[in-house]
Amino acid sequence: MKIISYNVNGIRAAMRKGFLEWLQAANPDVICIQETKANEDQVEVAEIEAAGYSYHYWFSAQKKGYSGVAIFSKIKPKHVEYGTGIEYMDFEGRNIRLDFDNVSVMSLYLPSGTNLDRLEHKLTYMADFQDYINNLKKEIPNLVICGDYNICHEAIDIHDPIRNATVSGFLPVEREWIDGFIKSGFIDSFRHFNKEPHNYTWWSYRANSRANNKGWRIDYNMVAQPLQDNLKRAVILPEAEHSDHCPHLVELSF
Image: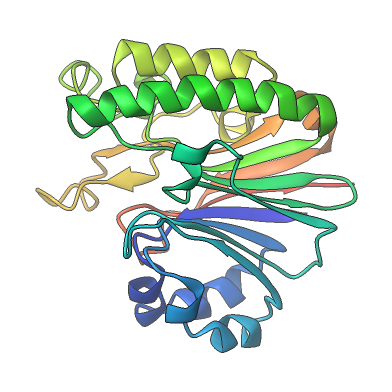
């Protein structure tokens, strides 16, 4: 099963930039989308279906044009879980999960800590999400959590670790959380296969960051430990340019 995760920074804008043509060429079985910034009824879903994704599920924020996640699939899921049941999380449209025979795939959009209030919100969210996943794994051990975590894990994951040490996304408290999250039973699939520096998934729109590859790796396909032997490959796809993020892929064999 080929799974791609992609923060598109607005699905309608991405579609205008050739996202669906790219998707057909990339041809994943499942694609997890973050930051749809749209409700399903605002999107030309017939075009998504024509691209081969008959099964598409959307979980949007209450606030229009903000946040939102979706999953498009070629395979019919056994079950779709909208949100986490934690009200303040679900209000912002940040989690959706599809359950298949051998694996469950979640699209996650973790908040960014743009100011002190949002940082507090993010830290609360992180703690509550960890508890939620600890419980979920008892019921669903074969879990893949794809998405924008808005955190770089190690110094290798960010272009300037010294100068960014006081910036949200690379704060010690955030790095500690994602480290603990991985140690709670997940594999950072990209790092499982690739230990090289200068591999990023997000670049600021400022100062020509992408052209100079001054990026951050804040997007992950986290694969639950029981699936370790099913891991086939994991790559970042920086050639796709529909967003300030790029897509990243994990492939599992069953």
